[in-house]
Each structure stands twice: as structure tokens, then as C-alpha cells.
Amino acid sequence: MNANNFSISSKIQEVWIVPGEITASHDGLNSFLWFTLHLKLRIPYTGYEFDILSIEASLRIGKDDVLLSKLNVHPSITVRQHEDTFGQLLKFPLELQAIELVESVRTGDAKFRLDLEFQILQRIQVALGTDKIVRGTDGLLVDRTYLQPIIPMSDWAESILKKLGYGSFRLVQIPLHYKAFDGEYETSIMDEFLEAEKYLKRQDYNKCIAHLRSCLEGLNRNLQKIKKKDPSESKFKWLEKVNAEAFAYTDGLCKSTSAVTSITHHSNSSSDFSKNQAESIYLVTLAVLHYIAPLRKDATEH
Image 1 (tube, one colour):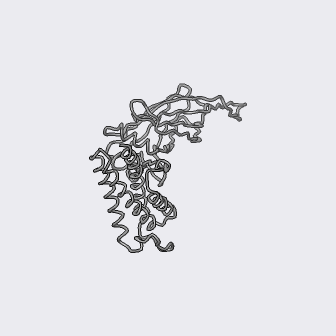
Image 2 (image 1 turned 180 degrees about the vertical axis):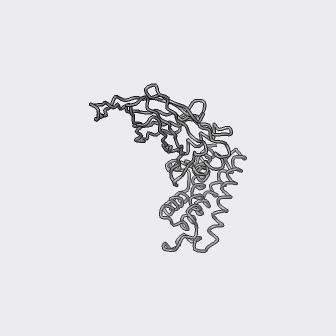
Image 3 (image 1 turned 120 degrees about the vertical axis):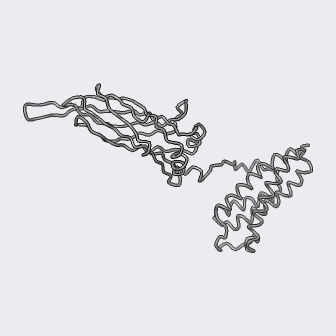
């Protein structure tokens, strides 16, 4: 249902959206879903005027009408004619979790519910004599309605999602609880990892990757210890494969330039490796550290 109505002093007012006008944007940090709200407004009778002071809009989805986003706009619309048409943009911010919720409940088209609450200031005209009219306020009104916009699957999947930036990034939370590693690793392993983290923050990606390589070498030594004591052979094979592939990648990167293989690589040179490469290997190494620590603890207790 892309159109509906509400009432002001018993006069029907129309509101609608055009699905083809729905669009989206992403500014590199935040995602927004845009709706153009169309309004056809009418005064109940001659001498009556009103202002739309605010529109509270709530975007929902699913059979439980889960709230995705909410905003309040102040359109400054004044209606003095018997009928007039207006437009109002609604720019809903959408967090990644909200977009993923839409994807989880969507079967084909993207179906939303748009709840609208209008705050209206009533005005009246009072004639004083034959040539003078005085306008005054006559109280506030609140009325509500809703729309059920549907974005076709082809538009949502091929256009809107891309404009929202969905799929171009993924947020993954890996805890940075180094205390959990206390006693689980040789000092040199954690020293190398912390050095890598330091150079990652300094944007010296060559040194960062070199220290991660040294950290992974130490992890490989730990894997051999785990292999001898961990009763779960399949668990070890999975971990060994992940760690070996990560090590091979960083080792290959480091061998591509002799400068990187040296931990004492001079500090003012330009970086040969990208931020994405360094961040990816950093996250892989951190994830493996978290995974190995409890395995090693379990192995030593058997």
C-alpha cells in the first residue's frame, strides 16, 4: 500500500510515495534510505488554515514491525488554499544490523511499513469589519497514518543495496583481550604481535607484516606442541591448515622484498604493502591467537 490518508478537522488528506523514487546513499561511514513523501492537503473550509509543524516517521519491517529507523522532520508546510500538493524527503539512517535484518526477513521484494505522525497547528481567520482580517491559532492536532512501501526485488538487490554500501564492508568483532593470552604463549610471540600492532597504528605496513610473520612462526611452533597432546585430530588439522595458509601468505609477501624480511627495516621508507593487506593478516593472526590459546590450555591439562 503506497498511498493512504489522514484527517484534519474531518477533511481527508492524502499521502503517498512512488516506489521508483526510493533511493539510498552511503557516505563511507553511514547508510541512508531515502523516501519522497507526497502530500495532497486541503483546508476544511474557507477561513481555516493549518501548518504541518512536524512529521515523525518510523520505518519498520517484518511481521512484528521491528523498528529499523526513526526520524522527526519539520517541513514548515502552510496550507491556505482549498487544495495544494507538497513533497517532503525522509532520510532514514540505517545501521549495518538493520540492513542485515531486512535481508534476513526478505523473501523477494523488500516490504516495509512506514508509520507517520503529523503534528498540525490550526489557524483561523477572523474578519474585523469589511476590510480587515486577523489570523490566530486554534490549537494543535495530531493525526496518524501509515504506508506499506514495497521495493521490487530487482531494484533492492541490484541498486538499493549497493547504494547502501552493503557488501562492500563487513564488521567482525574480535576481542582484544590480551590478558586471556597470559601464560599461553612464549613471550616472544606476544612481543612480535604487539610490535605488529604498534606499526599498524603508525601505518608502517612493511614492519607490521614482518612482525606478524615472526608471530606466526612462533604460533607454528605452538601448533606442534598442541598436536602431540590435543586428542582432537580433526580440530588440529583445521587449525593447522588455517595457520599454515596465513603463514604462507605473509611469508610470500615478506619475501617479495628483502627490506621487509628485516625486522630492522628503516623507518622512513615508503610502504610497499597496503593497509588492507596489513589489517587482514593482523586480524587472521589475532583470531588464530584466540583460537589456539584454549586449545593449548586443554592440551596441557590432558
